Amino acid sequence: MPELPPIPAEDQAALPASNGQSSVDDSDLRQRTEKAERQRDEYYTLLKQAQADYENAHQRNRREREQERKYMAGPLAKELLPALDNLERALASAKEADDSAALAQGVALVRSQLLDALRRHGITRMDAEGKPFDPNWHHAVMQVPSADHPANTIVQVLEHGYMIHDRVLRPASVVISSPPKRE
Image (cartoon, rainbow, N blue to C red; front, top):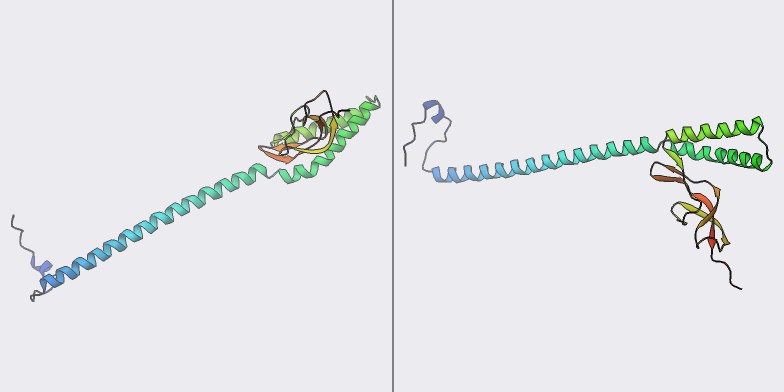
């Protein structure tokens, strides 16, 4: 075993006095060192957990803000949809009356502008007629017997449904087919 260089005098003053208890002091020192290392490791683990928790909370907060921004037009749009429905009814009445007057054209223009504004905010109309009934997207108001359509097919849309991005804002109110009655 190679010989160690002598300890400088100023460093020797910092060493405990040698009074025959060197092995006791060494074991005590080792125990305290081990305890300090365990605490250090514990604190380091806690620090890493705290950092991970902070990062997770930060990411969750960012996602929630994005979701909130994405769907914030929903409540306003939901309040505007009845007015849009009334515009649709006015246009249907004008069409039934064979009225192509300026008033009907004006109503059609307002309806078109309102649909464009909603579309710019991620709100789109669902296309439901002729499709299979899905209770997640449609609200069945009536059933009518039909030999022309398979059972549970949407035969008439009473009130259009709307989506906001990937969520249903309002389900479509529909009439669905049922098998014809056998006599």
